[in-house]
Length: 442
Ligand code: IMP
Image (cartoon, rainbow, N blue to C red; front, side, top):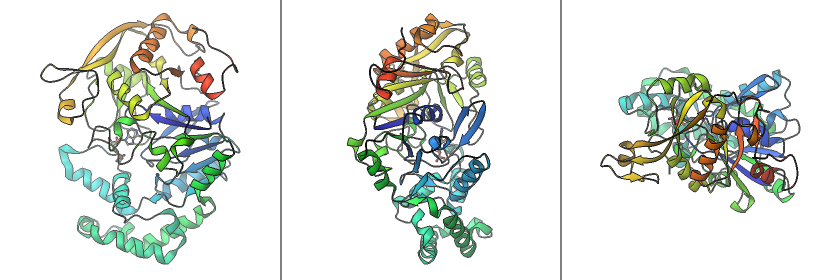
């Protein structure tokens, strides 16, 4: 620290919320830098469950700065509902700051997302239908509505008209939809502006000041490397960059502010939506992992596709992000298995073996996972707090991953509670500093 980035190293849903929540305890500010309410974080604290979609996980700590950066796309209705729900549970939300440059999800983005998917039929991506793609498309087309526009009625109206004009044809089927009425929409968004005004700020400057002051800032990513619009399994990706590099552009700080980059990976793999997934399990084992891991989407409730841990993809994510450490979540889910599979390479349609992620999508689509089977373990891991508490099979599994991913494991999740983790020396050194805190012994 001072600047630590937390990113998903798979296809999202790796448990980043819990890890951000843990690190937030040692940090001064938490900032989101991309994505929108397509993300969903579940945090369990003192037996209470919190579900957040837009607001950074640090909000649960009194006095921490929480920031929604310029790279995020914001559905203001969702944000306000989330603020109200937190307030109703007596959480102080006054420390939240929202970038004036962040783009807004508009009613037509939601309609276009669903219509776009319907049109694709069998080729659909399986988006969360939250309007994310159409909003980022407008941003790139320079037709976006930004948070700051909420504070200027004339500009807001003008920009909405300009943004809707080129969409007239695709919006024709929704002509009668009341949310598309210009007057209603402008009024609705002006009200959102009033509600959010106290939180709107120049967040790039705010973060610069915090970092200059030596404060610890946690950059919280959404989704995961394999859903990256440039480096993921395009077109079956999200519309932003969930990679560490985006933490800078998505918040307005330079790369030198970043000291640590932690990649979060489950001990197995999941994916929601369509697209290639070489280590997917279509059998009983896949169902077992889904049930034991509670693998149903926080945002959409969809059952997640499940499979063995994919080390080819993990190595790729480690490289794309320059990970300094790996966090392995949900290791406890694999307890009770005689053998645990792990994908160490891919085999292409013509028999070629791939240790590295294939750059060509057609090749990737036809690969099959080459599995190594490791000894399993029967014991429940919920009470393990050091590496030496882990049964042999679990410890050997962690070591195998560390070696093959080429990245040290900092933290291991062994249950849903925030105390159910194992800190390794590598993790303690980078967060608390060498020589301090309890040391885990292997
Ligand atoms: P979109 O981000 O809603 O446009 O969806 C694009 C793809 O990203 C779909 O396959 C979604 O299922 C996936 N996706 C988006 N957000 C998340 C997430 O937070 N976790 C996992 N998958 C996600």
